[in-house]
Every structure is written in structure tokens, then in C-alpha cells.
Length: 282
Image 1 (spheres, one colour):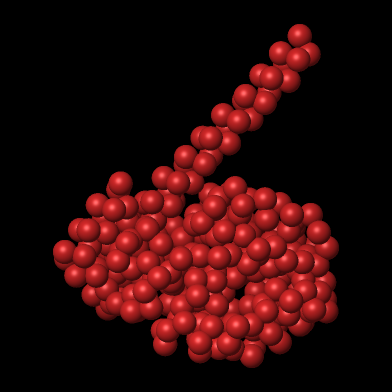
Image 2 (tube, helix red, strand yellow; image 1 turned 60 degrees about the horizontal axis):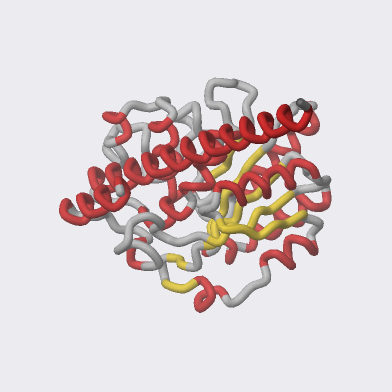
């Protein structure tokens, strides 16, 4: 009877995991469709880096950030040009309508090219000038600890952005103050507006630098939900700030955008949009 009970529990747990993964995959695919549709409607935007961090944001908004809770965890999208990835999540979770989603970058729209916390209550920090988001996240996490608030601050940075010195000043401060309520996702898609990150900024040891500043680190496939979840659970269990280094693909999910620096900041035309939507549906 005991063996049967354990088998039943294991099957139930496995079923829940399958259902959860299926939901994450569905939301991720929908978010990607939202991204290419809104950028095409705007005629401008940044699809490549938005698509590379989609799975990270999907996991966070499905598993940690409850937009209906005023005391929820908070997110700083330091790579603010990837705002479509954030707006796509707000649409998936019905915080904005499809009509508003398609108003991206339009005059008078709340959905500007970079997130603006003054316009959208679900945006926790206005970002855009690269390199500044981690500093804001450090301050938010530090403030929450001072006030005794039981929530976590999440920050997403791009690898091109890591060439900014302010990132490393913030990382040093987070390590010094042992901010165990702060987790940084590094979206390492390998490309920036000028081309290869390695060629522009050099082959840098981000993991070694963060560990030298007192951060716990993990390196994962940033498109694998199981790896994201395991890394987050590990980050939540250790003292001090944590960094999850995610190997990702720029333009993930749209064949002609993948690993192409030219799709850093360019909108698809009508034919390209239709091809993208077909691929994402498949």
C-alpha cells in the first residue's frame, strides 16, 4: 500500500510538471507572437533581444511575479529596448488588451519603446539607458531588506550591456551588502547592435567577475524551463545575491532572425511577419 501511495504521488507530481511545462510553452509561444506582431504594427522596435529573453520572462511571470499582488516580487528589465518582451507578458496575463498591445510606439500610447513606470503600473522601473538597471535593482532589494519586506527583486541584463561600467559598480555593491533577495539574469545571446559581443567587448569571464564580487552563480540554457526553475530554486536557497547566466539565441523562434545581429532593431515587413507567425504556430 505504501509503495502504491508513493507511486501515485510520483505520477501526480509528474503530471503537474507536464501541465506546468505545457502552460509555459504555450505562454512563451504566445508572447513571441505578440512581440513580432506589435513590432510589425509599430514599424520599429527590437525583436532580436526581445525574443532571446522571452523564456526568462515567461517563467518569471508564470512562476514568481503575480501581477495581481501589490506586494509581489519586482522586475527591472535593464535591457529596456526589449520592452516588447515585457509588454507581451502583460498581454498574455491580460493586464493590457490586444488593441493596446498593438499601439506600441504610437503617439499617446502607454507602450513606448522603453518601459515607463509613470505610464504603466505593472512596470517596476523605467529603463532604457543601458547599464543602469542593476543599480536600480540593487537599491530596490536593499530598500526591501531595510523595510523587512519578504519579496525578491529580479533584474534582466543583456550581454552587450555588460560593457557598461555601472553594471560592475552595482554588482560590487550587491556583493558587499549580501543582498540575498536579488537575482540577476544575464541574457547572453552573443550579439549587440554592432555585431558580436565577443568582437566588440572581448571574451570576458562574467561568471568569474561576479563570483569575485561575492555572487552565487549558475550557468544554464536560457530557453530550458526546467533549467531556469532549478537555477532559481538554488538562487533562493543560498546567501547573498545570485546571477543566472543564460545562454540564449537572439531572435529565438523566428528562423530568419536567429543569430542575426541585423535583427537587433528592425521591424518585419508583412511577408516576414506572416512567416514568423506560421513558424511560431508550428
